[in-house]
Length: 472
Image (cartoon, rainbow, N blue to C red; front, side, top):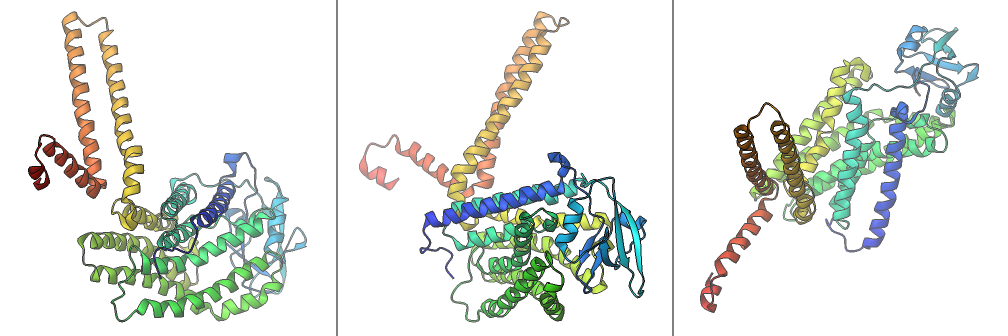
């Protein structure tokens, strides 16, 4: 597989990129509206529980909120009807919630496991108001926006590079990884949003595994045993089949639980495989990075791979351990303390941060020329200049306040004025050294080349003869 493609027309690829951008931004905006309705003046009903397709023909209640517990409901109860209406699909439940109002009540008919009798529960409904903690804000707003910005920027710069598209696919998955419950949305966004979310959630593992093979550089062709290709030919087709069954099953469940029974039974029979293959792809990604580090010849390549492996391992392993414990114990995420769950979820976003560091600072994918022109002079140079202006303005304000003070005598005024000018001179020197540090720290090669050319220009300026000029 080549890392650059000559076949795709840049115009066609940019058009595709624009379509993906519109779709991704639309989904993320709608997800933010669902997560923080109070920001947009909306008053949505807080769902009292979520539904699982564990028993047929009824859904199972999971992730119960305090209002549902207070009404007598328990995790694992079988849902029969709501307000006398049989709940036969996820869409039916969403429609009932959308037609309800905060402050009202919901009459739930349910059956407890092991009991034939049906029971009634009166559940109070409140406003959907998301926790305003920093954890939730990072998970649902900051990091998805960061992931999308990084992914689309890299593809826009390297439009014909396959690695850039793989990176974008992975970062799109990060943007939609945490569920914004799109099946609660109103039609037609309910179907489209659920489809987008499921695709990103399932294909994320594929992009991660392929990125391990081709990023930041593909494996050398001289390696005799290409184990990653054999692993890919076995794992990826199986995962595509399982993902197609899962996605189609959930999409059908939006309209009818019974119609989704073939897909649900298939997923139950392949449950072990569905849990094992993602772990195998995660391990394959880390193994690919480790092998590349062992065979890398240059120090720059080793440094990039070492940073990438450390960041990826720190990001993926805690989340993986959490999921394994959930499957092993047969519990959901509420089994763990809130602070532990949120910490693991935030750490999970360390991977896109690491990818950004490897690409921008460690100069992966040959983006340093574009970064040099675009980032340095837009952020570094102008940022230092803006900092200098702000500090100078603050110093002038302090001088003005001191000089207009009635308590100061003429000699003190002159001393303050002299000290102010001296401070501005020192400030200019400090900001210039800061600019040089930024240049050397983040743009080493470009900075060294610029210094060499500057020194050469100074040396040859006074040379008038041809031979000494060529020797220099």
